[in-house]
Amino acid sequence: MTVTIPLLSLRNVSRSFGTFKAVTDVSEDFGPEELNCIIGPNGAGKSTLLNMICGTLAVSSGSIHFGDESIGGMSGDKIARLGIARKFQVPSVFPSLSVVENFHVSASNALSANELDEILSTVNLSVDRDTTASELPHGKKQWLEIGMALSMQPKVLLLDEPTAGLSVDETRATSEFLRTLRGKVTVVVIEHDMAFVRDLKAHTMVLHHGKVIASGSFEDIENNDLVRDVYLGRR
Amino acid sequence: MTTTILNTTPGQITRKQKLGPASIIAIGIILALLILPAFVQGYTLTSYRDVLLFALFALSLDLFWGKTGILSFGHATFFGLGAYGMAIMSIHFSIDPAIVSLVGLLAGVGMAALVALIVGYFILYGGVRGAYFTIVTLALTLIANHVAVGWPSVTGGDSGLIGVPPFSILGWSFADPISSYYLALIVLGACLLSSMWVMSGRLGLILTAIQDDEIKVQTLGYKTPLLLLMTFAASAAMAALAGGLYAAGNGFVAPDMIALLLSTEVIIWVAVGGSGTLVGAVIGTAIVWWLQQKISSINASAWPIVIGTFFILLVLVFPKGPAAFVLDKVKKLRRDKEDDR
Image 1 (cartoon, rainbow over the protein chains, first blue to last red):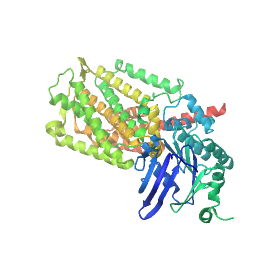
Image 2 (cartoon, rainbow over the protein chains, first blue to last red; image 1 turned 120 degrees about the vertical axis):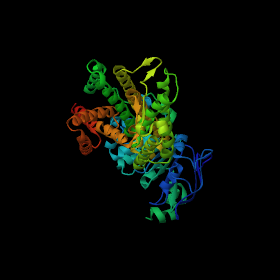
Image 3 (cartoon, chains in turn blue, orange; image 1 turned 60 degrees about the horizontal axis):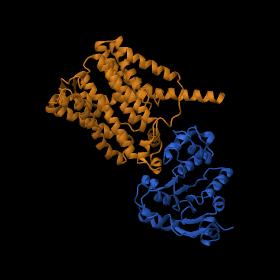
Image 4 (tube, each protein chain N blue to C red; image 1 turned 60 degrees about the vertical axis):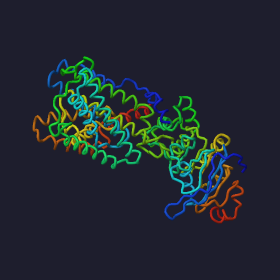
């Protein structure tokens, strides 16, 4: 990966919970409008890392820079206003509101009818526009949350397991959709589905016990002995 | 982002509704309230005026509790601050009679908003929510009541203050029952419509979203404690407005206007109507008042037992309140109709 000016930069980022080190000395750069993946076994520290980037968790040590600005100690709402949007691991939509109302809440500015139609069409929810979010099936909730993040017009989109619980077709559609974002927005995806990650052809970082054990193209990662030993397994 | 919310025109987001049965009933009720003084006079009309002011008080609680999901058990504090503000300014200070009511009302409303901002700042920015918020606001009413009782030189102590002049402004006096009734009706109508208008916009949606998942709302870029604090202060100011007009209408203030019992009663009024609907708070107040009149006329001591039993049954049968139950049924009927097409 050739990153000239990183948009999001992590330097020796660590997070401890008591004596347990969830993330240790993670340093990584994410360039503008690039597609990135973070993979690793359960408990590797992937979601903790995302929580620190979006301000839900404080950094124990190290620094996180968004452009020129240090965002390590910033509140979540301020980080979001800078242009970092996040989709949670468990679909986090507002169940009491309709699909359209969810977008009205998430959008960075008041949405025009055309803008709303465009977002609905992008995430294939046009026919469900007036459906209460609690009544949507799991897959559509995932898409609704992705749409909500996009309606914020972010510079960085953090997606925590966007294909969890999706069908094969839905997963393929998600992969195709994320690839269309390359060149438009910096995307960081946490995933367990290796077929999906392979399909994305994204720069990939591997976390294990809170540490980066490999970083590079997915082909490099697949051929990395350490990654195969601790996560991917040997054929 | 907060600026954007305030700049968004409320009412734009919700879909346009046709003039349905609910609208026709509402128009009928408004017409009935407007012509009521033609049929009812004197003491009875002042009783109706007080019901309208209590409904305004209930509306103020519903604006916060119903829309944010956080129960304030201390709203009598703000009603009382409005009432005592009006009484203290008009009795203890030599203010021009032409503006004394306005000054008293502004003092009460301002004091209530300030107390809500100060207390609310520490508890809402401190992350206090749910039952802990309820307990803190309950304590607030206990403190306020102790101040009202224990500072007789200013508040009149246990006896309160008698001799609050009727509301008047720049020569316009609302001393007689008819004009004070219409004043209460106009203020309630204006507050109800403006609350419904504001809450039909993006702010209402965001407050509902905060009820669902506050952390998620923060990750969308909203300062949720600020939004909750502003709603709390607006709600407190509205409660004080009701208190100030109530004191001017009845000519006195007493410690029971800033007491825990009133804080409890207003919760029942809102719950009976259905919290979160705004108009339900007004209807709930009227229903409970009507029941109280009917039952007390049969047996005065039976009222507390009846209201307690009624409230328990209501919560068991309609956990979200009767108004929410009716709204859900109407929604279901509409959806069934659409499915049939």
